[in-house]
Amino acid sequence: MNVLLLAWKVKLPPMMEIITAEQLMEYLGDYILDAKPKEISEIQRLNYEQNMSDAMAILHKLQTGLDVNVKFTGVRVFEYTPECIVFDLLDIPLYHGWLVDPQVADIVKAVGNCSYNQLVEKIISCKQSDNSELVSEGFVAEQFLNNTATQLTYHGLCELTSAVQEGELCVFFRNNHFSTMTKYKGQLYLLVTDQGFLTEEKVVWESLHNVDGDGNFCDSEFHLRPPSDPETVYRGQQDQIDQDYLMALSLQQEQQNQEINWEQIPEGISDLELAKKLQEEEDRRASQYYQEQEQAAAQVQQVQGAPSVASGRQSGSNERKRKEPREKEREKEKNSCVLL
Image 1 (tube, helix red, strand yellow):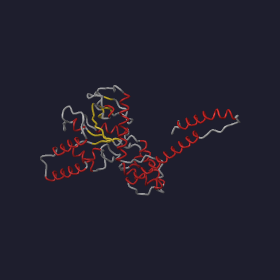
Image 2 (image 1 turned 45 degrees about the vertical axis):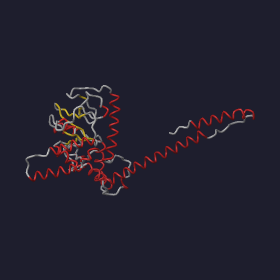
Image 3 (image 1 turned 30 degrees about the vertical axis):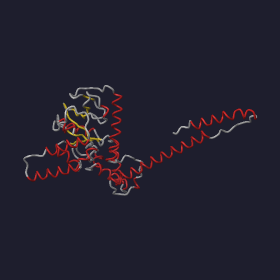
């Protein structure tokens, strides 16, 4: 929608500050219907109508996110899925920068022409193999995923800079997140949409010039504009990252936990089954962690609430005088017990 708005293909009413997801879907649906080509052949018309029908069927997914499957051989290479039809139908280029450097032969061999999902399955299969060469290949592929966890490589960044045309409006996919991207004077920029920048009217674009994500903020004319309140922006960015992470978990369970016992996972397991197993393992560890915390807290309470052992002897009169203060002190200790 941001691409369509910036390209003046869709217009919102003036002075509108808040819009619901349902309203956005209505605008998008209307544009898809209006964008139907007028003078096309019968075969092209049937093909377009089929694509439009497929796109409308998954339009509701746009409110939570689309699950696309990248391939590591090109910035515009994705596994063809119904989700990709939306971008084709709207004539919006979709890019990513998660590429293998062709000069690193062992990684090129390990990754091959696999998509992300296929590569995860290959890693699992290789780890279960008795062939040492396959085991080594699986390890190299796994290391590649771990070392490029930001889903952007320097080779991919170079290819992106070369592939995106000057002034082109497109969508950039990274970390299970879609961003509006453009190119200005040879430099790539991402549209700033994090909620931390809601009140930063002068901050519009962020440069994409390295894989670490620390770009420079610019205004609508691409002039440098540092945020007025960096601390507020930082908190807003962290909130946005948390939201994106939770959404990403609902879309795709990535193979990130290296402590899983892969030998217990059967060969040929699907991504959905793998995701369930990873989630079950995570839930089990979370439950175990909270049980340990409760046990530790109970032990602390027992120690603090237990009577202390007296050493030596006191006379009867002194014992009566000190009995009441000790009971009060013990009661105070019990009430001030802290759960870790």
